[in-house]
Structure formats: C-alpha cells, structure tokens
Length: 252
Image 1 (cartoon, rainbow, N blue to C red):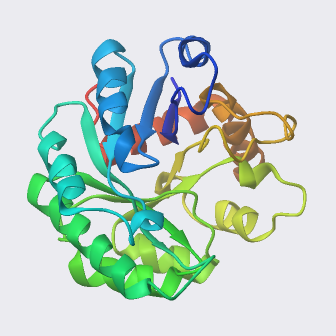
Image 2: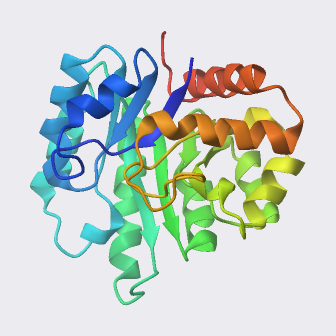
Image 3: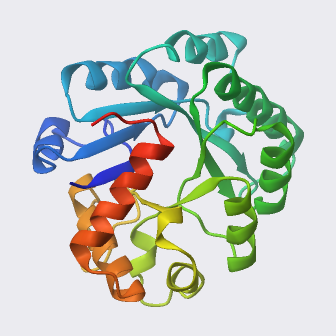
C-alpha cells in the first residue's frame, strides 16, 4: 500500500478528477485545501471515496483576505471523521514579508485549533523556516502530531523539527537531478521520520517532469528513497505507510 499524504485534487486542478483517483486504485490519498473555498469539495471527496481523507485549513497566502467566518468554517468540519489534519497552514515569505505578522497570527490560530481537536498540523513553510520552527516549538502541544509538507530546509533544521515530533513530507523534488539538500537528509536520517507525498498537481517527479503530477506518481518518490537508503522498495512503502498511519491517525 502507498499513502500520498499531501495532494490537491479538484476540478480546478484536473479536467477529470475521478480518473486521477481511479489511477490510485485502493491506495490512500490525503487531500489538502488550497483555499478556504475548497473545504466543501474536500468533504465531498472524503464522503464519496473510501480511500480519501482530508486536511483543511487556510494557507498563508490568504493571510490578508481570510475572514473569521473562514476560520469558523474550518473549525466546523474538524469533527468530521475523515478530516485528519489542519492544513496546509504556515508561513510563506517567498513573495512578501510585509504581512508576516498577519501570517504568524493566522498560523498560531490554526495550530490552536489542531491542539483543541487533536488533529495533525500540516505545515507549509517557504523562505520562513526559522519563524516556522519557533512558532511550532512554542504553540504546538506535546501530544499534537505534526507533518512538514514538502520539507525544503537543511539537515540541521530537519533534525530540529524531528526533535519536536514532526515528520517530514518527501515528494518529487527528491528525484530532481540537481537537488542535493533533500537527498542528504534522506540518506542521513532514519526513514521512520519520512512520509510520502506528491503535492499534485505540482512538483512532478522524474522521469515525468513537464507533465501534470498526480498521486499515483508517489511510486517514483518511494523508489528514490529506496535507492538512497538502500532499503528495499516494498519495505520503504511499508515503513512510510506505517509512519503516515501513525502521524495522521489512519485506521486502515
């Protein structure tokens, strides 16, 4: 079994989302919100497919425009049995740092929701790794689980997050020819700290770069982890699946 712990499957992303879902057969997908307007669509996917779970939250790019009603809508669905996390949430300073205080406040509010409802925090962090770490360390409850989606930090930062009980989402970037940091992390650290993800429809792995990504391509990420760690492919799938089940409280 394979688990794609982070993907986006909507009518905006694909002409025929149902076809994309079929390609995964009985493998598991955790679908994440890209905007506050995605929540109802994710709930519908969860309720109509046994192998789909969801995480819901407000992405930092909406820090200037979200409303308290949007936050209430997130909280409303956190009691849904197939919503397994709050995310993707976090900090993104790539395009602007001018609203970083707003981003941080939104991040903290949603970490508090995850703590309250015992849901896994799913973090988006771009060009903001130190602030992300400091907020997680200060506000995440010890028993609240947390996953760093599409981890892009250094080996040192990876080790610091792992000490907080955070798992690292490993996706298609690992297969890129010139990617060095992530390969060092995967080669150095214990595989039990990793979960697989695609971030579909983005970050398509080799050998399919240039095409739209989809969850079934998780197999290429697993194969690269297997190559770098020397752990047999099926064992790589077994370990990362167990880690994902533990980190997202999946009963499968």
